[in-house]
Figure 1 (tube, rainbow, N blue to C red):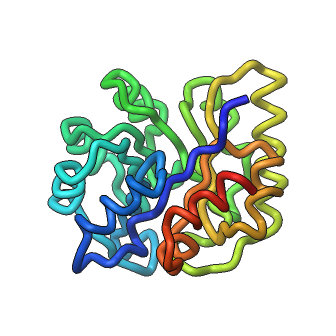
Figure 2 (cartoon, one colour; figure 1 turned 180 degrees about the vertical axis):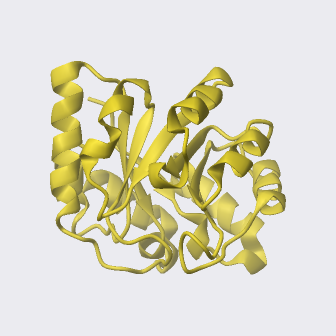
Length: 217
């Protein structure tokens, strides 16, 4: 059985010493770096854009997981194709032609994912499940770090896990929001492959211990 991967969310890092933060995450055993791109429209917050993604790419060899919380992923995706990122997810309700952009990503060897908000039914993805490399289950309403995990997300994870098993789909299940060592075990047992963690890791005095606690929960 594949071990659960840990993807620290850079949103909670100290951007004044970002290179040191990323180096510490690498040493601590992070598997993937999760980058939340927010536009202040789709979510009520701004994060960072292409120059910061390029800078982070130069700082690390870890895979970069881009989560587009933007109203216009059709603008962002063509640019991301040439930025040596490994994962890109976007919200289906922000894109008229989800299938087209999923295929564009996959054609360039980038893992293509769709993100599900707490209020977005799983059924909206039904036609696309065979084509997806992963699904990002939001277990908080997107836009801010340090929110509490919404328990109903567990049911979505279970449903995705069972659908994958029943239909022999190949997508991974990634979960983002309010994940701590206290709830990681239940989230993993529901079928999660990748845990995204922001404030839990970055508020810790020891990143290695925090990541290990998530992996071993």
